[in-house]
Image (cartoon, rainbow, N blue to C red; front, side):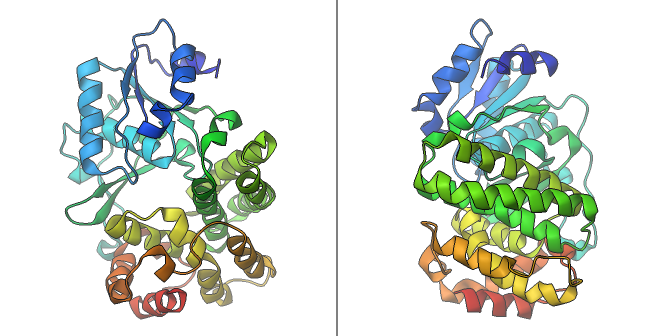
Length: 354
């Protein structure tokens, strides 16, 4: 944590706003961050909520404006990091964020307007090992009114630095640790079967998987095991770099759909759908693209974690599967499957996992 002040100086941040949620604010984590930044004019926005609802993004942007912040420090999981990214976006766009959003795959493009140079810099301090948002240029918020996840991707949204401290992750409970870890596992697997897979992303994904498969069960079962937590953080970081080079696809598209509709943690849907999606897409790959044993290993890993095993267990109504399939078919990430996947195939996949 002592490095945080130096990282802010390198990013040109002298008047930071710390963006976190009430769990971090009520734990020993926030006092450690504030102690590391003693002497700086630090503001705190502690209203982060899961999936970064639009209202909390706007509130964080307003807090940054009132504080006169020249940069942001996110402390927390993916929602805290995304809230900080989207707050910077909100300020840079003066609230008119629509032109900067990624267009749906149906338009045949991911075209969006680039962010301006005055976008606030950001340093991320992740307290979970799942989102990898700390090393990625993407971000998103939940539009509660439309029940959609609005997504962005711009180099100026990528944090200038990420401080990985495994001691900060020991406060995450077993369910959060498992769900966030499975999101990182999903990125590794999706990088292996992506349409744009290549040797570098494959190497990163395989090493990320190795670290996560070794660290995640131990981090869930023995939350104070800092070495296991460190392996999860490293695996998560590698998953983010892998998928930033190759892109995620089917499982993440469904995760966006259910996250937008129900506020469900992405890792829950990812964990349930990952092995079935791999079975669906594997025939489109070369023989050596994915280790032969991986599907069974994913099933065994999910069975060992305190997560729902089927979509029905996660509270997804059977009557909503058609709408989820339709939303996933429109998600921009679905274009990165190794072969085209139809809405009907998505519907059957969801039904089998329900």
